[in-house]
Image 1: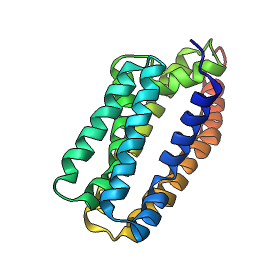
Image 2 (image 1 turned 45 degrees about the vertical axis):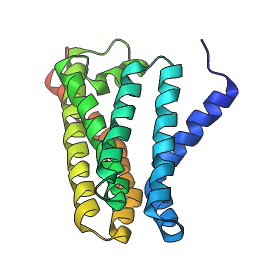
Image 3 (image 1 turned 30 degrees about the vertical axis):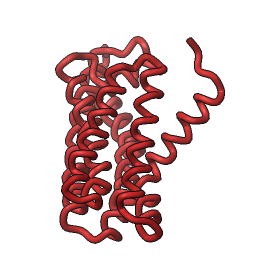
Length: 195
């Protein structure tokens, strides 16, 4: 069943809020209590899970609800830590999804590559598998840094890394991979003219 326009707008709005979460949390914490900001976060996470359910993405809905449950559990200790752990969970979930695609091929990057190149050759499959490994390592490192900023950093440091630096690093990896891919492809074709 196709999505209606209001559902699409809501999905886009929730995605934008999710991407801007660290900055919004920083702003919210300077004007409201951690309990109120945490409540808004949990409402948004559950709304995201509902959107996944509506679109029949049961696995994504369960993972999203699990994140909400973990954040709720952490909030019994401290609301501030629960708020700061959200980017950690997002990085870990993405790393897990990418890692699972290595165990159950095709790899995540191969799936993306086949959208443009359905006839991906053996070299392309091997390259996308290695690139998926790079993304898993990157996401785990980002989760580690997010954890460090959540546990030991100031709110400003946490916001700077999770709301800016992590996106810049993601962009560098995403854009920087393109020339590397073309250089490696040319080198492969020069070594294997029949390929």
